[in-house]
Length: 212
Image (cartoon, rainbow, N blue to C red; front, side):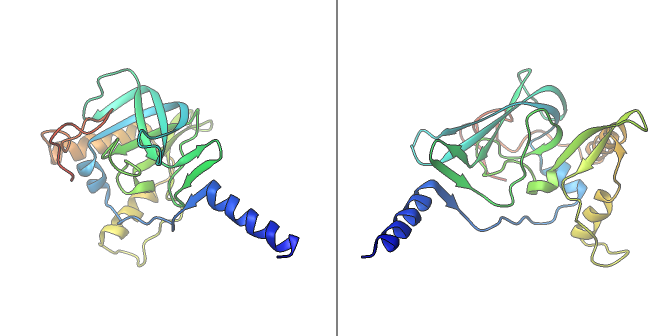
């Protein structure tokens, strides 16, 4: 075997050991009503810390996103901080990558529609559909909501499918946080719920919990 071929094979094996990659993830389009209804909890929080670790089984990698300065709009959070566990990350020379998963940045403030925390791969309803950024608008001197779904558009004007309804809602850029929160409260009044779907919002699933 020529040295060049051996080097190429060795590099390929190193890359395979370094990174596990899957196809890009896709999500079922959700209406705003579905985001609110399906969420175990809805909260506003600032990302204080992002850490990664290998799971107890020694194979899976998890990223732990710690949020503080919380404003809980639905559900219950028994602490002053909240930890969101996301599958994937990098630990030393081992990596687990899931293209399409939203990235929550340290220092960023977000509105999250959480579902299946410490159970699901990305515990937010509809992947990026259930993640919203909170930003300061210097012109309006107010906090506004930005969507991660900037490219979502209705396929036809005046459509009524769930995908088109959500696209119409998300097209309202620069909505104030106050107005956004009001919409969530209105939706909860229209469809009151008894509580989360058998999971503990800030930790592992409760014993005997069911999967929504």
